[in-house]
Image (cartoon, rainbow, N blue to C red; front, side, top):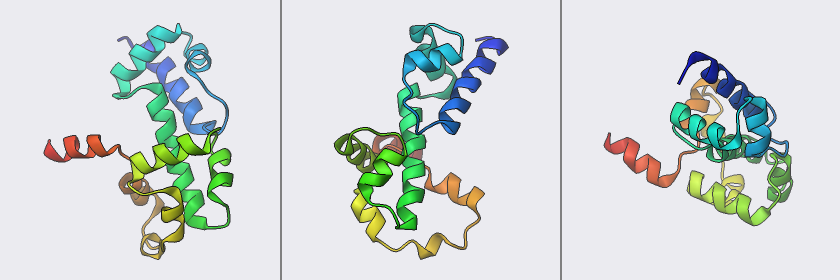
Length: 139
């Protein structure tokens, strides 16, 4: 992969980071990267180790965790605030990545993380699929 492709892929990844709540799909992200959808998907996975969809959903769940910790929004409101359109799919993906349901996550106390700097907390609270956690821990 050449440097120009990496720059374009980063542009698409930055779009996902910034506009995670917008309706984004592979064709729209491929246009940002000036690539065909198929080439974009393959190149993104090769460069970042996960599909564009998985990356976007991880960002959305990461933002959802922050909103749920605040406690002032319902799970449904958080689901739509982060760009998900199906509460069932959101809850399933959240549970898969976090290990507990959004309602359980929202209901429990989060005081223990209040004293941790945000940059450190972001690294340690990034959602990781259960299967990936086992693979990473074994490495």
